[in-house]
Image (tube, rainbow, N blue to C red; front, top):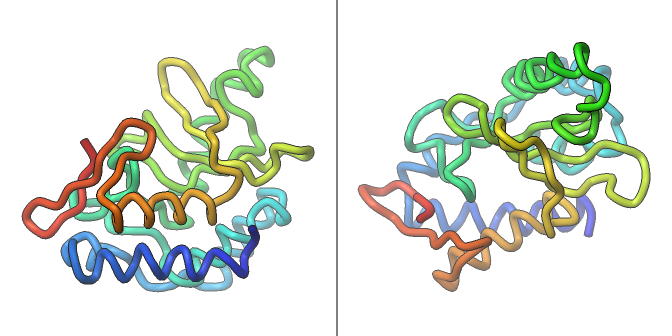
Length: 184
C-alpha cells in the first residue's frame, strides 16, 4: 500500500466520523500550507513521509481538545508544528545517552499523533531499511516499538474497519459518546 491507497482509507474514516461522531470530525483542521510541509521535509527523510504529507494536505492535524483525541489510543492527529516540536523534545534525551537511540526514541521516527501531553505517541519509522514507513507506538516509560501496521494506510484502514464493524484494535473498542469518538 502507498499514498494512492491512503486517500480511500482516510475517506472511510472521515465519512464514519461525519455521520457517527460529528464533534470529532469537526475537530479536524484545514490543510497545511506548503511552507510547513517543506520545513518537515527538511528535517526528516522525505521518502518516509509521503503518506504523512498527503494526510497533512487533507488536514493539518486535529484541534487540541477532547474532540480531537479520536485516533486509536485516544490520541490526536498532530499538526505539522506539533510534529516538529514533539520530535525535537523526544530527541532531547538522546544527546545525553547514545544507547537510547532506537531503544527509547530515534531521530528518524516522526510522531504523527499523541496523547494530551505527548507522553505517548504514534510515529512513522523513517529509518532506512525494511521497517521504513511502519507505524510505531512510543511510551514515555518504556520507549518506542513498531506495531503490526506497515504504513499509515494500514493504520487508517484498520481503524476504519474497526469503526465500521464495531470491533477491537489492539484490545480497544471504539465507542461514541456526546458526538465524540473514544476508545476503551
